[in-house]
Length: 483
Image 1 (cartoon, one colour):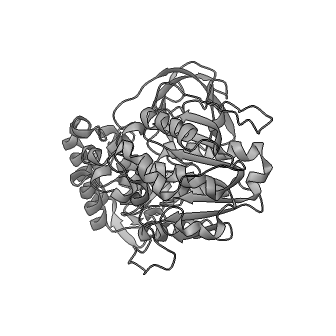
Image 2 (cartoon, helix red, strand yellow):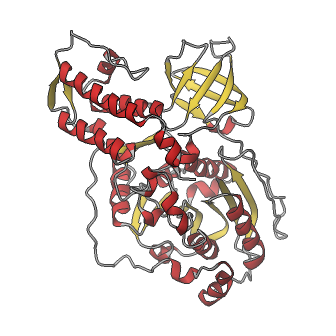
Image 3 (cartoon, one colour):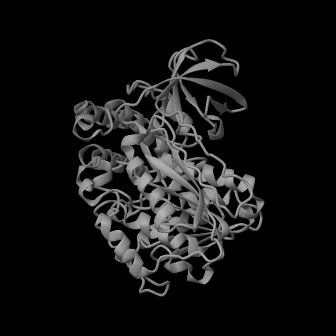
């Protein structure tokens, strides 16, 4: 998967494509861009949206169960995991039994009133030790719900994030439900790119940004934490479910004064701020329609097609964004969006350089960890005095092996990073040479230092990992998007 970072400058006298131009230009790849996004105004009739619910770990513990009953549930759940074996991996690169065991641990942890109680139940190897001294425990959902939810996870391949009602993304815990795309760890890079841009240009941190196709509101919330005191974000989405969940997440983090959520298709809800934006970000649908049926079951069966399907070539919405962004941005504005890989990425760079030439400058392709190395493309605008800055964002560390250096643990050893969960509680490391395989909770990840090493802050202690090799296997970040 690739991402493009675009520093967008609207030059004087620049000619932007009209709607009719778009139809002609898009015909070469079999897509009609002016038709790809239905136009809705903010005054459209209200559609029924889901009512966001608190994630399990935030609910009140009102259910009392005996430890023996909880033990029976876990034994049943463990047997379901065992029945899976490697079948999910073999069928569609789905989760293996190790990952499912980890999810089982997390589900119990979220459900218990006192998470420290989960340490009384040994789950490190997906085993259960009887603990006679615990007679009753309080749960945040009923035992019947636990049975039903885990059955859905295994038999229906319902995504774990929908099961527990949240996803840990950067330092956030975001509510997610059916009808809303689960935010991916790869998309965190967009926020990192915005952070770099804001640190290099103070004006960007004080202006108005737009997150198009916001989904759960993840990127909008991530950006809001970077902006200066006067910075604001407008988050848009066509889906009433996504708008509802995004508003719930914005309110939960107390960011109503910074983020405004609007319902509508792409640029349509932004007519009142045309030409006033300092930045636009988006993670649009980009999977070709014919590929949807081959996605991992968790994705293809359960996540909203509206957030996945990019049309026949996967390019419908990407081209729509490229053609509309320059008109919405101030001169010197910033534009970053996610694509489906090298082929799409290079096509879009060529398109922006040639088909809509004069609107964009400093085009950079930034790869994530799912590929072997980053690509970088520079283009200098003649009107700009400073040369374009090459951005060669390093790969992230998920699924890789590292040597352990410093941080109070100078001994050498192999550390396997599991990137399937993100956040202060979810991103875990199985450390060999640290504490004989014990789980280590990562409190902070310094993403900007990944070029040669990763700095991991565990509590107040900093650990530095030097990259030594690369391991990608089933259950890695790559398969979670279905690619």
